Image (cartoon, rainbow, N blue to C red; front, side, top):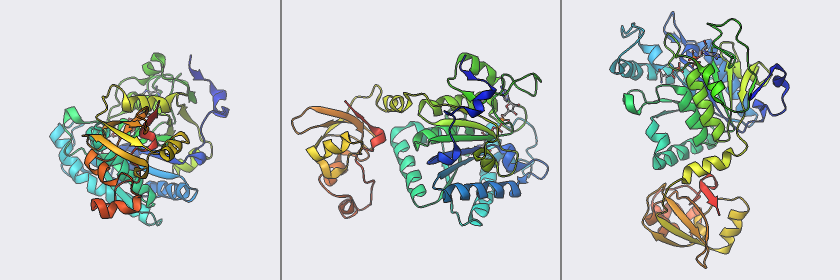
Length: 383
Ligand SMILES: Nc1ncnc2c1ncn2[C@@H]1O[C@H](COP(=O)(O)OP(=O)(O)O)[C@@H](O)[C@H]1O
Ligand SMILES: N[C@@H](CCC(=O)OP(=O)(O)O)C(=O)O
């Protein structure tokens, strides 16, 4: 059994929100939208914005993944049936997303924070080139002190290329930006042994070490009403996050200041990351791919890689092959032996132009300021 019992709330392995460097917070429709008015729950959003400001002031970067676009617009469009057709959801999302972004932007800017909207589809997180692009944008936004507010791009996503739930989208985002924690704010304070709406004897589980078939079976059926996730998609999200080295919590969002409550020890369920998960992510990045080029690097660059750094163009002596941004390449020493493999942030053509150059020269060479690294540390596997 991979469950820690109630004493697990004092388990030293449970992460502390105050220790997170980068956290993704997923907020479900039921928290964002007041069903009676079909309008944003502004006071509650303001209390979350207070929490985000406090986290940022303490040095934690925060990304919000917010649902609610469809729920905010469906009533005003007369779409009141519980189950909508895909085109109706897309139309409602097109109208509601503006309201959703406006609501977040207002409460964050009142606290001196700048909201930045990103609308993603699975392509943006699964296709390696788009993945690198989305990640670079998110890194830049966080570096500029912004609070990214992400939702699925429901308006253009078709049934086959849709996450359909923001639990998994949030987990992919956490994986993409190497977040150390993913917090799913929900209408419930964690995972129970069964759905407590159905089984009054269901028991709360504070810590999950591994997602076994027994845990999966607790997911149950999709919920009624407007939420698309339920516990099932939260467990799928937990698998993605913990396999990428990111701890995940399911915590109660219904109260005001839900992140402050979590920081101060409110009851929740933590899913602990696997010990081997960082390397598992790297295996995922490189798994099964054939390298399409070689980067030959100097001894200084080899030293930097061995000390845990990224590969910078200044240490690259030669670029062979034809590859696109995001493709896998071999990293070779000057005697031709393979040192490792990684995903290159530049095409072969651009890599040749900036090989041997410092990052402050990139803009004048390329006409645009690209990333500093040719291969980011997280995208590199050393032999
Ligand atoms: N084993 C379980 N433990 C806890 N909640 C469960 C479980 N199985 C099903 N649920 C249901 O999942 C709901 C949370 O999912 P959902 O309504 O989709 O939340 P959100 O809108 O936050 O994504 C809970 O209110 C609960 O009724
Ligand atoms: N992207 C959709 C929400 C999808 C979703 O996961 O909703 P929920 O289960 O309430 O978190 C929207 O903004 O309406």
